Length: 354
Image (cartoon, rainbow, N blue to C red):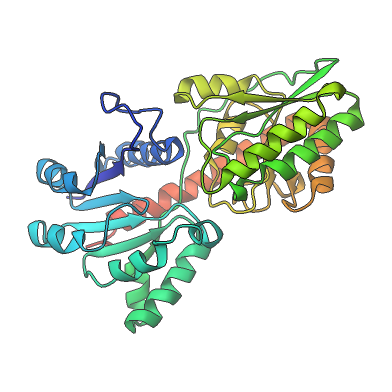
């Protein structure tokens, strides 16, 4: 019988007494918890744990005795699998990637570790986007001399999912102010600065003062320069009434309340494989302008991430058609998640795994 164990690494600044610490990579934790819940709903035994580092994996695997241990993201050094395979020879180790190549390129260990992982027979690489699956199959087939069947077995596709308990809200029309949420960790590929320019142009066009909301608690991957530029931009525009609003990273329930208070959401990233923050906004009934990179984004409301003019245009379209934006996005997201459920169930129930 299949039994899954999702394994996540606690961030160094996390509170070890909390199961869902704010210091944990929240998007990653939420993603794993959604998949864990989905598998449980499909009557597949599953457990999820957060550990301090890879030296605690053996203890949890010994306790749970899973058929599959799913390592969420790249945090286990390759040589550790030699020990883990010796201790747990019947376990299939699934290393699940959460990024496409543009983001993974910023993690200096990624190609080295992924290449080394492929040398262990019980280690499977799982991409959460078809593009990454294709690129990893190409890379590792060239490295190892795999044929097509082996590549398909060793590099699989396990996409994200999201709960379907969506809400609706009245589109707020404050006569003076416009609240736009551009949440998520501040990183270069999240494209905050270009989105801010698009939001400012849109606010000026409709004659409102912009409150541009971001998460300031996590600045990563050279995002400090982005943060300085965002701060300077709005300081320079302070006399025009436009404002940057910083929010600390919070627990999920509080964050959803924050999302629900927005007029519009912006998630026009340069690289995405799912975008949980966008799903959070849509789940609360907030219309969203997304990126053409988001797989469940509705094309008519998806903007070119390199064009602030297109972002402003799609914001105006969304402002005029908020109900249609929200309804179409919720329908598209639900369809995507149905496909994701089928993909996971097929792999873990029909013999495609060991």
